[in-house]
Amino acid sequence: MHQLVYVSAATSVMGGADLNDILDASRRNNRAHGVTGLLLHIEQGFLQVLEGPEAAVEETYARIGRDSRHFNCRAMIRQHIDQRLFGDWSMGFDHLTPEAAGTADVFTITSDAINNLITPGKAAEIAIFLKSFYQVHAGRFAA
Ligand SMILES: Cc1cc2nc3c(=O)[nH]c(=O)nc-3n(C[C@H](O)[C@H](O)[C@H](O)COP(=O)(O)O)c2cc1C
Image (tube, rainbow, N blue to C red; front, top):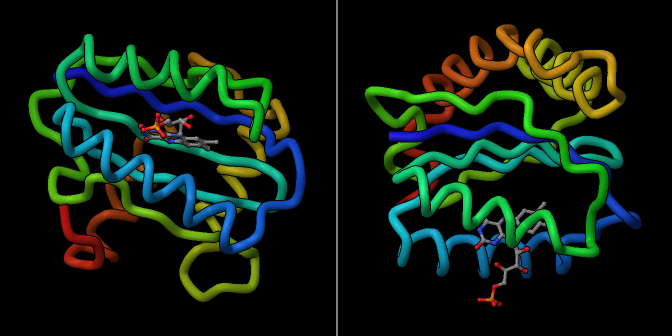
């Protein structure tokens, strides 16, 4: 099983309808290809986890990378995993703000990554918070 975590910058301000379009396509395609994961929207950026068979994950990432709704996609983590972190989410989603209870650390780490303050290779912090994020929100999204 393969896991890829990337960050990117949104091209314009994303409203609820824009995000719903992205999530609808994501869930439909990811279900069909055995991909699961999490999309975090934070200020003007995204952090996304894609996990599944390596070819399916890399093909999905390549398609996402060509999407003009965001730019400057940077893969922070590409690794083999024994088990999916988000196995029952075809694509979980959250919008993070610094004020929201319990998400301050996630917000900081994610915005640092999006703002180039965490480079690939120094992304261990990201992997740690992702696991705790799932534990807190388990059961929230159906696969
Ligand atoms: C931030 C972001 C995350 C996305 N995540 C996914 C995803 O996980 N899976 C997916 O298939 N498409 C994702 N997309 C959408 C793709 O770029 C593309 O629009 C979509 O896969 C096309 O699907 P369709 O041809 O079935 O409409 C994402 C787009 C953006 C901007």
